Length: 366
Image 1 (cartoon, rainbow, N blue to C red):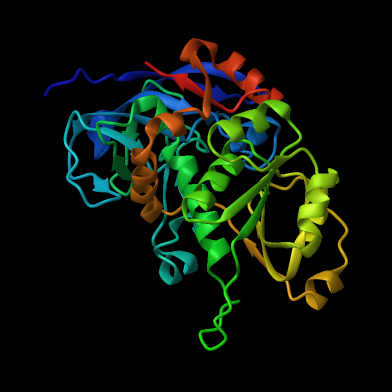
Image 2: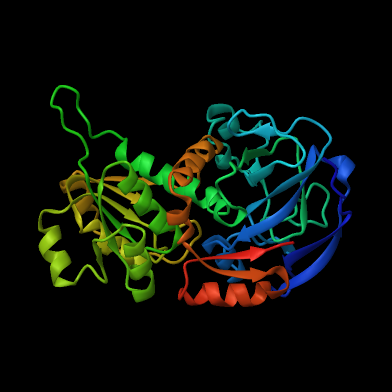
């Protein structure tokens, strides 16, 4: 199969004035292990935070890390998250970063490559700089020899496949929530099965869906009426607008076994903490970037024997798991995609995503 390789690539950048703009970048196909012609890219909360000036200060930065497309060129073997062979013409989701392999985190935790402080990330890089990577909001992207990709099966569309990367984040959070140090093989005491998820935006709702998939009872807290309705459509039926809603107060009287925070607003942490039973577990998922602080009474954590865990990204090992989950019911997962925009209307896509009157917003890049 032969595909024309673009050498002039259109990409969306965040310029020095911190405004979204379009640029043409010279792509040198021979310098990469391969090239992926991008079909769709999802807009993530991280992208919105970068637009607000939080996190990465790199400018210009080529935006987008939740992207999928078709392999249009292979110069050498491309790493595969599930071990399958990658060929020209294959549809893939791209694991959007690679680590240095040399720092203390790479040496101690090679399976958690996102901990690397020298990591090169599509969507957080200057494409005009030597070694820079194009973001997923581009027509084509060069794939470094250290990048992994995940092959997309035939029954998952490119649009739905944009959920693979964020779904790995949800999978990692749930796995950390149900593991940990509370079990005792002699006492037979596990963490329990009642989970409260604060925030049912795209990441929070995916987390709730994964938790339900593994057999947990899931209760969602989401003030936005539109997002509560979407949650119910995908099977998260116990949803409340606030922790102060009487029905939730009655339910939570004895406390949740697990609370997962996926909002990113510091004041929610206090509400979440007081929703956990004694010896329960609290997973903080929504604070990828600094967004202020909150005053807490540490005695609540100590006296109630509460375990607090941070969870940030999904490792490459979670990509095959994400595919298997979506494969079970692609139509159900597809309900999380609320809006699609062409690349030329990326600014409008970001404006909508800011309002939260949407779920997952994706951009068609070709």
